[in-house]
Length: 252
Length: 309
Image 1 (cartoon, rainbow over the protein chains, first blue to last red):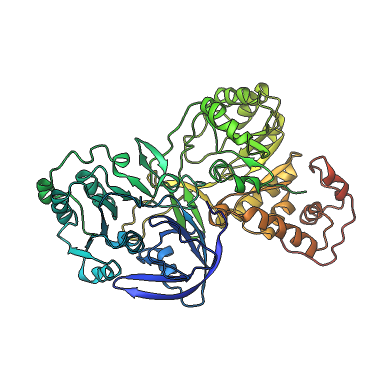
Image 2: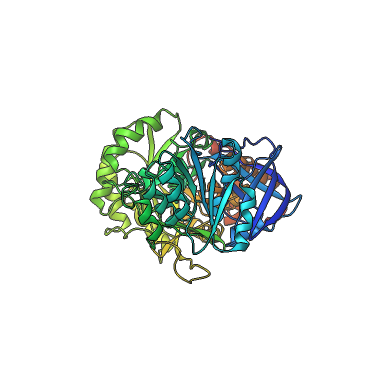
């Protein structure tokens, strides 16, 4: 694990629908595995913010940002030439040997999927968004089928799992979506999210229930097998039920 | 030499051994008599000029700590302090008695001031006295800056047998979600650390250095060598890093270099000179720890320009 942050220059910030793609020079930093994350800290922020790597173009690191708070707004306002301190890669990425991977993303949760898609050879992807404006970001993910709220991304996923029960969902999105994916497939891998101050196990702030006890997501995850996160995964709903259950996933 | 420690609860040496080794002393997260899962998430939030945490003393309990964690920490080769918590004087004493048998532990810090759990039922002085009876190791009492008169508690801790003070712990604070106006933390309030705590810690250290002869580990919002020098000037023998480690895991070596440069820039032969300057003293500081530092402490003050720390 890297424990030395590196000051990198911003190459550009681009609007991608409602989100911002922050493109930073890669410098000496290893992009790591898809699903791993970096801590990003800009001038004026006390704490860094955890961001999974979205794109890994040559010589560059790309982070997709939803500017919803002080930290993310500060990062989204960065301009070419600005400095950002980057620590990582941190945590554990998605398994790259999953059987018939299918990428599942909800809202800003699509962030790690472009890099994952490239690494896995562009497998099928199912993305859910809360509006057409947010769904513009689907252009970052090859082979993506898109649904817009109120359609749940778990609806096409349920159909896909009926046709291909061995397919492995690799998912990132809001908590209700992750739980709904877990109900459909206990073998799914879920990229969870939690507030983090450090990203390297020091602050104990990012705990989530894993294996029935509170564990630090930065060290255990952020990608975790669904059966470790949810007690009733894979056994509660048939695909047909998933289509009608009101709590079965959201298009964030 | 001013030693650089981590504030208890701000570093897991087993997760990042190289960060622990970059410190002069590694201080463990607080260990309690029984295991604690800690508070439910959300546990952290950034505030305007600091951050809140509400971890809730999550720890494996003293028995599992000694059995499973301590041997692995010992293998890292770091100078080790163990932070101890409890909910009665007996609880603190129980932990101290167990730790007393382990030669690898240089000192024990008594966390009598965590803002995220119900306050210990016993007074700090009775906790220190009970711990004193249970161990011969140096005991540092970590006090809250929210005490009405921190110097009275510091003196009481000294009379009860404390060997040093850790100043300070966090202050209770609240952050609301800016959209919903609901508390962000699951426990609503949490401990405020970071820059907002800096002047609070300085005041506590300054007051206790005048009221007590005990060496002080100063902590609260230290981000730079200038901040560390200010704490030393106020009366700290050593300085601990907390929130800054979250943003900069390499902060210890940076602050150490900056501290040295800040003292030299002012013409101080040693950091003791900063203490004398801040306290208007001509003689060596009364509570300098024994060792090589004392030799430097007798050197004449070389600074000629006024300083503002």
